[in-house]
Image 1 (cartoon, rainbow, N blue to C red):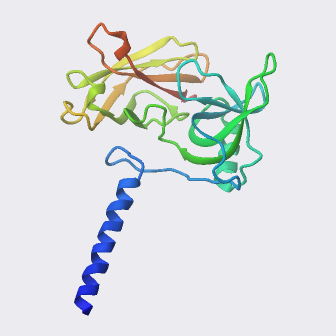
Image 2 (image 1 turned 60 degrees about the vertical axis):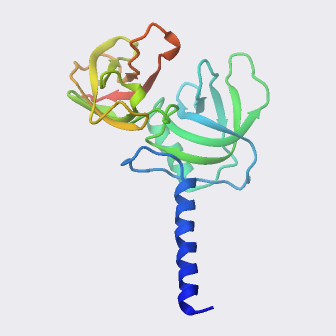
Image 3 (image 1 turned 180 degrees about the vertical axis):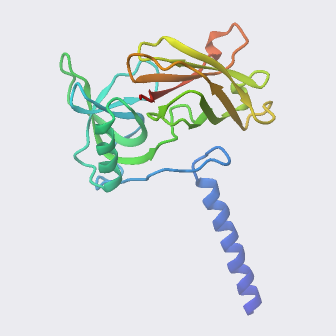
Length: 246
């Protein structure tokens, strides 16, 4: 084989390799930074895949985990099998911000039986992903600012990307509640581009609010705009936030 033919084969192999790499990457909205930590433990590929939010339960003095899904139970996390810096750093961060969750994907299994008055336990074999921008509905909507647990003040600028089906006439409603679920601000998020598509579309919303006099925690709610009477089409993304205090 000539040198030219060999170079052509190597070049084609490199191109196909690059295409394969791009195809197997996790789908993320275009233009979004992938601030993701991949962490592993020594447990190999044991356990089932779980996605959800981990946080430090100050009352129970433990790591807690709430999987994605409606009406799912809270778990106490058993993380003795995870030995690495990204996970240790996250746990230390969560200890300083009780009840402020972080999205993770892990492999684990239920451990033991549920005792009366106590949470079920979930043993972690390894953590696949720690993602500040992740959420249980990231296949439909992702918020880039504010991130879960961030401190906010008025006026609040909300940015992210959502599938075109999340909008109606280029908009969808946004709510801000205090610790007790009381709505303290309402606004409209507007598409920053053509919204009649199934692709991700950037959006922005500006909210002005009076800081609650009590309680630092609140919730930002981004609702799918559903003009129909079909409640099965309702959807919403809830982001826990903290109010800036003087």
